Length: 90
Image (tube, one colour):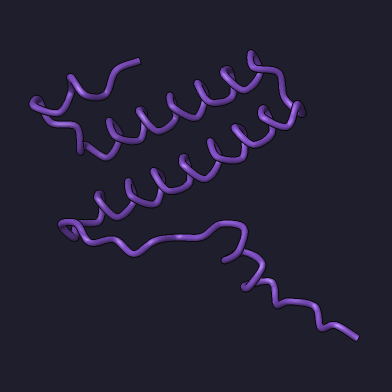
């Protein structure tokens, strides 16, 4: 009989995280976690759209919501400087 994987193993498999190599500051670490979550969710949305489970419009709308959440987090964390603002557009 197969053993059931531990909950932590399942979480690590479904939501992998990469190590952060940038400048270690709390706001950078939080943003990095948010960015990795964004990328993971966009990957799922893309797979669902590719397989026909989501319409292109629904995939676009869900991705747009995630993007706005990520953009808002950069502002709340104060990591968007004047020289970086032009790179984070709507």
